[in-house]
Length: 268
Image: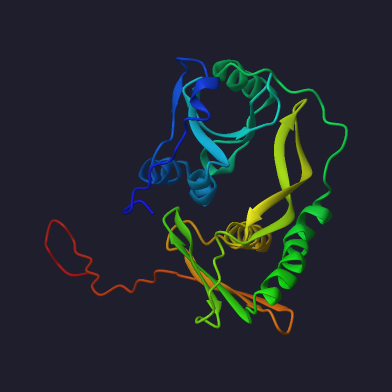
């Protein structure tokens, strides 16, 4: 991701921010990697959402502390942007005071409480709901098997490519669409609120989103340090899904150890 250095289109977000705020918008995948590495959080997982323009990421400084802020478009003309996730180093969340300071710095108003929210159980089931909705679409196009490959390390990566079989079929996953639910996250009245909304996405995009959600639920950290890799296999005909994650670990063995008395040079 950092080597490819993809440029993100933030033109839909820029006009709705203050001309000057204590920070900057992240415009390239290289800068995204540089944001996540010292902060030690998984902001790199937003790469695909940034590429599609589904959100933008800003680095905002409050009280000499760097905060990574997710910006999301809304359908509200008076409030075209809202803040989603706010994290600092090691995924630490801000206090109510800091959250307000970040809203003020970007020129946003704190949102009023939302009347309904999504339970954790419902959130966890959404990727399965998307898979269920996906099966008849794939079967309609005579797709028998799908493999979603992912790989990442050092806060870089993660979804690499998607393979559809039989390969000889003419199937464009970027054009074929799927209606499914997605989770919208935001902070309201000092609390994190998640709501469910119906959306239409390309099959390829829906697959990446559901794989990301599935990976997040496992709690396996495949982004940081040596990272991990694996695949989500979807047996379309059999209606089964298999997620496999392999993590890399660096091991070292001492090859030489010498302890000496400094004054005499005698080996101890």
